Amino acid sequence: MSYARKPRTERETALVERANRLIPTGLRSTSIRNELMFVVERALGARLWDASGNEYVDYLLGSGPMVLGHAHPAVVSAVRERLAGGTTYLILSEPPLELAQRIVELVPCAEQVLFQCSGTDATGYAVRIARAATGRTKVLKFEGAYHGMGEWSLMSNQWTHELADYPRAVPNSDGIPASVRGLTLIAPWNDLDAAVRIIEENHDDLACVIVEPLQRTFPPRPGFLAGLRDVTRALDIPFVFDEVVTGFRLALGGAQERYGVVPDLCALGKSISGGHPIGVLCGAERYMRFANPLRRFAGEPYVMASGTFSANPISATAGLACLAELEKPGVYERIQATGQRLMEGLRAAFDEVAIPVQVTGEPSCFEAWFTDQPVYDHRSSLAADVFKRMRFTELLLEHGVVKAHEKFFVSAAHGEGEIEHTLWAFRAAARALAADDEDTPCECW
Ligand SMILES: Cc1ncc(COP(=O)(O)O)c(C=O)c1O
Image 1 (cartoon, helix red, strand yellow):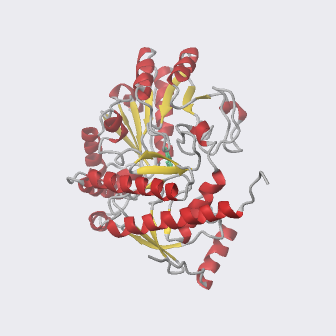
Image 2: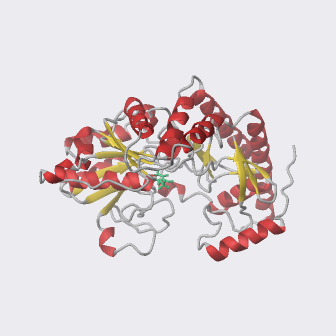
């Protein structure tokens, strides 16, 4: 097997230069160096093509949403048909109503549903509803978890290198008022005793506890989510699952089905709409009803929840087509089997060159950490060699495989050809990393 990545054409170079001039983030939407990044020309199934004609196997999948692969024919044809009827009305139409019905049928905690445009919106409304329902203001999240770009949530996420004593939050961005920092409390993922202690000590102020049930690629330890469920129930604190990644990716019922724990509220996005902008907050009627505008006229606590493109008929149509595909027998089993082969192939490639690696996550969403120590949360992941990880991501790119800096997403469209190519790229990247190690002078001489 071979793969020779073509250099950037003049046209793509011009596009990159224009991007860097016009858009402050440029091409830096992943952590891959600008010199190696590319402009996407098109995508189909599990493959991407760049503007210089290079073809890649895609495990970035638009940061997760393309669980069926790109441009799935059933989604494309449903959307195409719907487009002729107009694209947005503000007034409710049938596709979002039908999608709400399917969510209530499939997601264990869902009794009612609110639509937004992004995962950030969905987690933001979860927090606002929790605050209105409890009259309390603080949010407890876990170190290393990501819940979108809201001010309360851009704290101690996966890009945090400064470690503070729990439960003190470390902001991940400037431009967030200092007063917001104290409203977010941080607990260690997978340490139930420490988390329960922080929750009990702060329960008078806690509006909610929010988790990514599979935190990035760190699965919950047995009993961890159930323990959080117990303590939040006992103290009457809304328990929120951020299933923006795990929803419709781990299973039709998401992490709630996979791990057998049912929260009060759940944020969804990404995989639910076959690659169209969406956010969904669903959950127990006891909390969701705070968004009913009639409460305002009755003088009851009320959360305003609206948006120009919310309940968008195109995204909902794509969502319905996507769910119909995901419900076909064998889809999740196929994704699971593909992911398992890739995880095993990754381990084997590095075993062969004697580079210690930990592969964490679930088959549909996993990552490699270069360390011989166990990795189970954000702090333990910091022991891994971050430069090796970045170099691995870049070596894969040079061998025609695209992944996010922090994980591989697997789709139902990854087939035998893509798997074989990826396993070959793993071995080639492992050999190159081993050669790098040989070139590095040993510190003991
Ligand atoms: C777990 C999780 N929650 C929330 C979000 C935010 O979603 P969006 O980018 O659609 O705002 C993301 C995005 O990556 C996510 O991974």
